[in-house]
Image (cartoon, rainbow, N blue to C red; front, side, top):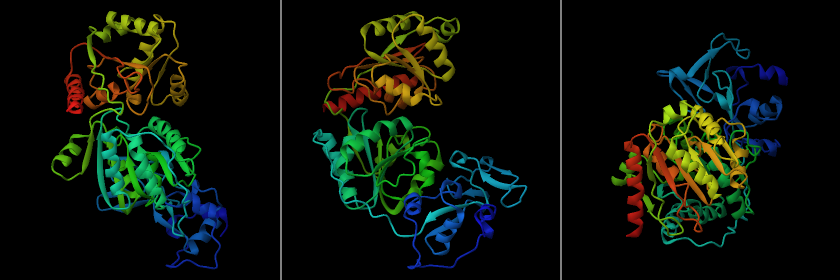
Length: 479
């Protein structure tokens, strides 16, 4: 059977092999092992001819599994766990010649999984990771960080869960260093998963710097490292759809963030990406109500860090009434109080992030602000093709004012920064979102009192709760 004919063969008609042991005489391809190890991929994701893949299958080095299977209530996707009927569709399939081959729409961005296309997983020898994984960091942890770090270390090599509930700017990344080092030296594989690409881009260079002897890779849409078989992986949660029993330690950063907190299939992806015996660490400054209740009922162990690493309190946001801001923007004008703030901010030379409620509001507000200031100004949102480049320019001080949606509420650390939320009374700004946004300011010990302003047309419950939340954390840190 040649390569082209194998590609056209549905999964149910591929040659079956009843082999439970590896053939010692067969020489497996190490490149295939490195790409497929710990993953669940489609034929099209592998840069090998299908005949070579089939040889590995016939010799017991990899397995095929059904991509989409029939379930009691309809269909289920083996990759993402989707069982919602409205997220399945059918098409006229060349492979199986069916006019109604069912595929999963929920994870279509990772490549189409259908009834007749298999998912491939490695069944051969494990990759032998390097034992040179020394931590190169001479920083010091605060007392709160030390407690959290030790709790993480205590869990390494075992099975269980732990929540590190830490205020924005507490230094959660540094808390991870020692536990990761111990895990790597034990030959364990570690993943730090986060819902946001920006957080991956923030974390990857920091971890590569402190673990220079370790193979570290970042996985996100468009990353050129996605096929690198790394022992320490920093990944978006969406990329975990492609993994299967790959990690011993799973660290879920920003566990409360959208879309992870709302998407059951992403949570399912995390559960599939780890070995049955694993340690899962959750990180959050604003854990969900469900998580809070679990800690109260002693169902989820946790450690709390109420103080920022530099010892200074969180900046408490100020509220600024700005009138009916929607009408002012529709008329091509800025509310007077906001206009004064923008001009003063531009004159100060300090950088600022200006959060708005939507992409449509983003463009309009940015265009109006440009009429009032002459400094470098730009805007960014989730689907912006230049998102990565703009954030980097902002870090390098090439942009002074950056107008953004909530996509940058987390994961971006910039010193000497002030923050404004324009239209903070909009319902898109939840309590947790406002706490995270406020947490962008004052993160440097040399600039710990950055200013945060909520511009509004009537105080929302989320605004009031966010300020109360911040004040309570500051009070707790003092005690």
